[in-house]
Image (cartoon, rainbow, N blue to C red; front, top):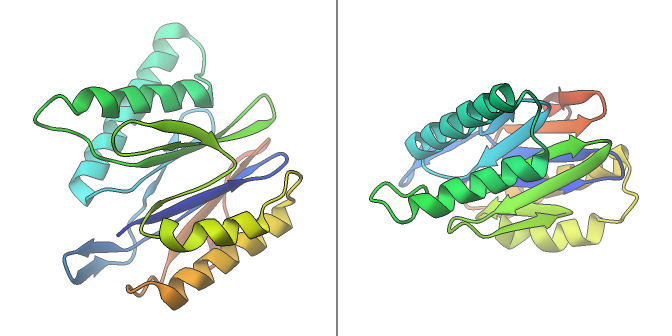
Length: 195
């Protein structure tokens, strides 16, 4: 029941996730980090069971770091997204498939990018995206907020509306949210503005 969503602006990407861990009908904790920092100011948010998510994100992060060292250059966001998609896609043919829908956000040469990778390995570059049950509520809301030259203040307001909608309509009580912004200054945690 993970909720991970993001939106791009003219020179930034904002990505948010809930911090709840749920097992069946029980909420286990309210402080889990679902947004993982990758090398060179990229963020990966994955919606899956805790053990699968932690194993999968550790695998991706280690391989991205290895590729950066091996090729002596940082990978573009599209390359990180394609590697992640291939990892999911190849694992489907094994007994240990990673069914882990993922959002990957980053900046490449001042241009924001957000990639949505679904659990069977399909990938799309998007301007706004949501994975998990929250996608049933938030796509319409993000469509009404979005415009090509979205400012940081407008994006923050949109994310606040999304969080309010989840707190109002979703069957779980989502208390804490992680919100991060990626811009030319790198990754900044702005969660305190939303909780």
